[in-house]
Length: 217
Image (tube, rainbow, N blue to C red; front, side):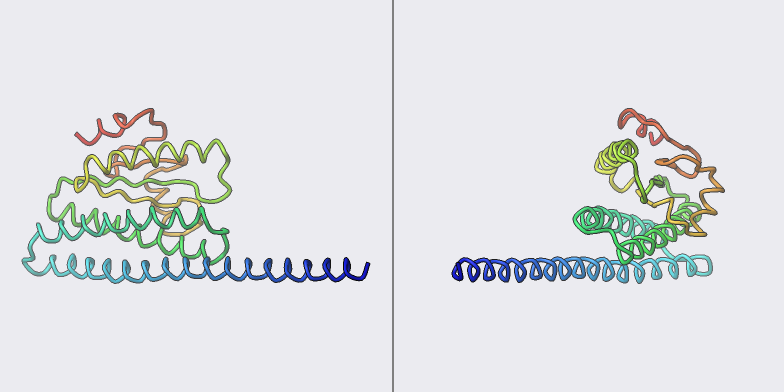
């Protein structure tokens, strides 16, 4: 009987230790991912600031438009790739205040990029397309999640097809950020998800990639 109690106590202690190790490792993994997101954000923030300085300088100096557009395209590709990685991290992690805060920071960064992209396009008379994807981030229903998955997949297809012709900018529209709310009002975005093409065309229902493509050709 005493041996049974000893074995039970030993098993209980081992289970307790393993449980706490699991919690610790999970916390370390989550913290590591948040740190990576933060580092990406800081790097992207520096690059965006550099772009804005280039744009401001362009207004006073004779800078090369082709170089500015190329830098804008490269930056768009980087933040798009980072968005895909962050999305995977968010699916793997428990959504907490740190993750939500980082997501808001990236939404602001992408919004700044969108505004900058509009200005460069106008100044340089460029023919690339701005595709802004407004989606729901919080308390997403199963039905809405499925719809947004379809939108994301189709946008990925069109981005792979058009590449540098497209600035694909995903922005969460329900994080109650003042500047984003103002843009939602300006472009009358009342339904999520919505794809805004070149600040003119709004798509809230798409059956296939051709529904996007027809507005880009």
